[in-house]
Image 1 (cartoon, helix red, strand yellow):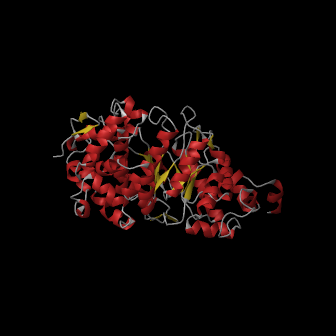
Image 2 (tube, helix red, strand yellow; image 1 turned 90 degrees about the vertical axis):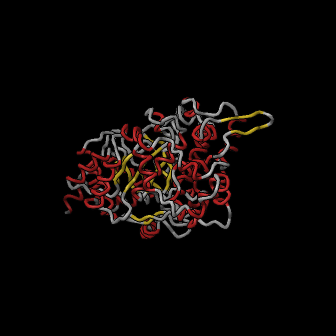
Image 3 (tube, one colour; image 1 turned 120 degrees about the vertical axis):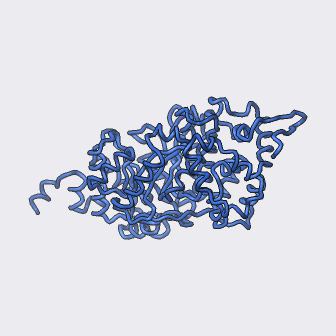
Amino acid sequence: MTRLSTCILGETFSFGSIKEVMNKANDLRSGDVQAGLSATSERERVAAKRVLSEVTLDELYNAPSVPYERDEMTRLFVDSCKTEARRPVASMTVGELREWILDARTSGDALLAVSPGLTPEMIAAVTKLMSNMDLVVAARKIRVVVRCNNTLGQAGRISSRLQPNHPRDEVSGVLAVILEGLSYGNGDAVIGVNPSTETVESTVEILTRTKQLMTKLQVPTQNCVLSHITVQMQAMQRGAPLDLCFQSIAGSEGANRNFGVTVALVDEAYAMTRELGTARGPNVMYFETGQGTALSANAHHDTDQLTMEARAYGFARRYAPFIVNSVVGFIGPEYLRDGKQITRAGLEDHFMGKLSGISMGCDACYTNHAEADQNDQENLEMLLASAGVNYLMGIPVGDDVMLNYETTSFHNNAALRSIYGLRPAPEFEEWLTRWGLWSGSGMTDKAGDPTLFLKRRDLHDVVFGEKPRAWRSAS
């Protein structure tokens, strides 16, 4: 057993358990302070990191954050852990695992090969020992390639979720925003709408109308309405054209019950989506997470929020999702106080998701009561692009008029592709090229003009519900 004490500059620090070491080794964030879990000084934080670096992976396996008998998430992680996959790193300490991950000779394929043998606590532990640059270097190695109606995650590419929210769920407004987003090259990850009313009827209508638009334009992407998973299941049973099934998830049984879900329910939704959904697949699930989720539900079991977030990814990987999204700054400053904490958490979440073997994106965002601004948000999206993030959000001018928060804009995503020489998903790139919006080196001078699509007479009827009088008389 690793000795849980160390001396820093003549001061001895002793910890009562591996869990306490994990809590106090976490970088500063307001949620851990609020929960009474954070280190009380930077010296104590360094001491906890030093002790954590000497903890073995076997010790972490035997010290889950929540006891096996009390939590179905822990049972899922332990029962599904492939110990044979961990063999190349099984004898390592957390510090040695960090060195192995960052070694230039260790490939992304090697990391993905051991991933099924790593529990969320192991992934969280090594993350706590990394600097921001470490997190970029490590995550950049890992490519998780997935397929739904198109292909996401290939090297040299970055995608976006087109998020056309409307405060009253007016579908014509939703569709108008979709056209603008498409004109900027957004939407290859998913066209995903957060409904303001989570009724089965509105979910069916939005799914149907967005699919009509996608079909008319032959857009190679996926649609999704972010209603509760049970609402989406009812919509599928009514014949709604649903490509991706969505749910917010967390890292403990109690936090998931706060979302109204269990493993059994998500299993059922997954099976239904494979059977009734309209996607080609095989990856048909979409999950959202965020540091602080379990704490906000008082279901964190005295565990720091980074570790609970790693456990959410452990849940997600059961379903080989098409996309997982850390809504990193959305929960608020009670959990991530400022731009520095949001940036760190975004890089942590992206790396932990990739090391968990899932297709990882990030909502590089902040709420207006956080100590953050647009420069913080843009810094994070550039760092994530450097780290090889699979996708970001895309919203008009970065301001969501329904959810009232700030995130990445249509034009920011176009700029990221230009800065880093990145391209859209391959099928989507071909589609943009056919419309004259992409030239091979980037967006053309037609970009940002949604009227390009409205020149199609049959499209006006889909967007606005009826044809102009002149078109009706002509037909």
